[in-house]
Length: 301
Image (tube, rainbow, N blue to C red):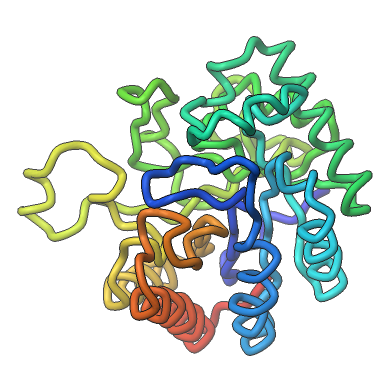
């Protein structure tokens, strides 16, 4: 039986991918500075400071870089967890890495069920070969998972999925509607991705911590966009908003699931950090949010 007693845990997750640009384009040849430099030099000091065991959801292109693999192997030695992050266009079709465009695909719709399974198997095996661990955590690229994905993961021996983004509907972008997702870990019903099951051998969903729109009444007048919702994510949230989420979830005895992308900590490798000051502020928010959660009784997985 897998562990679902996560209510006092803060789970820090990083979608670990190649560097991008401020427009989410992917340069060729691919660069991996967020993994080879950002993780050991910028993130590892925070993990050591607070005894955090992060989950790196690793995309296939990262596994093709020897230096990036060495960093991730070293992270495993220090207690990090390696999960699977399926960008289907980068698995069994490496020509897409040369396209210079960021991924726009939701795996559950970009692939047939058979192709999705084939690519998850290939990526799982690649992680085992390159990093030396068998992943049991999964997150789909762009959070594009559905009940067929969960059935595939169950067949392959996975134990946890973290693809649900409560309150967020991705249909206008071609993805699934996660707006009805639960806000705390649950055993997934094999009939409905968003329903809890009493079958304790099923995969556990560990949804990203996301609450209602920001800024109260004004926020409700804004159009549907993920940026307008409250995430436990230093990408766009102010520190006071992050602390409010921590307090709310502590009161409700729910797990905290933080997420961000590896390249977000680097200057001009994503839209979110454009200079040294923004980089320092990003890391400050990350550090202080974790510190505040631990002060309020949370601990790392």
